[in-house]
Length: 86
Image (cartoon, rainbow, N blue to C red):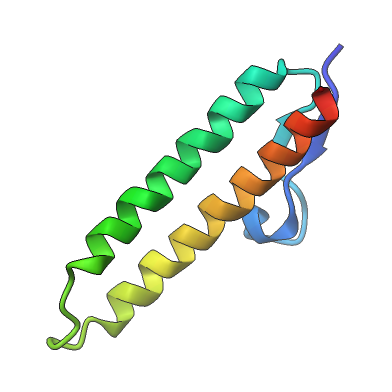
């Protein structure tokens, strides 16, 4: 039977939860999903490391930072669920 747990509020984007983790999923599946998000974070950070903000790209950096925060929050929740599944 599925055991759905809402993601932390940082990932929800609103006051009511709409995104959930299936706590009955296999530990490996939860870890794979977390690692997928961390891989995306690494790729975005790699892109940022070579970007120049001399053209006033502060807004772009802020938007990418927000995306990074969402991905890291999701990965953290997935790793937590994977630990509980162990």
